[in-house]
Image (cartoon, rainbow, N blue to C red):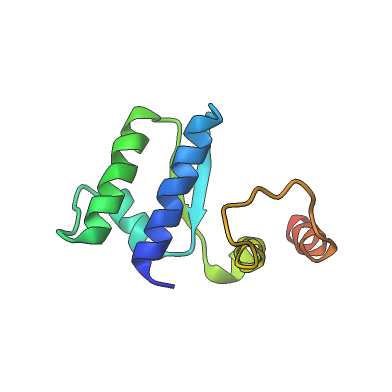
Amino acid sequence: MSVEAEAWGFLEAIKFVVEKDMSYVIFESDCKAIVDIVNSSHLPQNELGDILSTCKDLLSIYTSFIVNFVRRQANEVAHSIARESLSNPSPHVFYDVSSHLYSLIFNEMA
């Protein structure tokens, strides 16, 4: 997946939590480039920079939001959800946890 696609997903996640009026949110990403750019003062002069500029603008308003890097191996649940979402032609909110995801979540909590 390209870094720009990860950035679009990150922007949509920020918009979602803002729309739901959530506070004290910790965003985790296994895309180190995005986390590094968002947590720095430098923005690339390209499409990625434009997307992340919007993200940084929102993050500056909602100062209780945190952005952290997590290794891909520690992010198996997120990747499983992303793979399952590919089977839906439009944005989708999961209200029920599949048995496959439930076992992954349970293993990560143990």
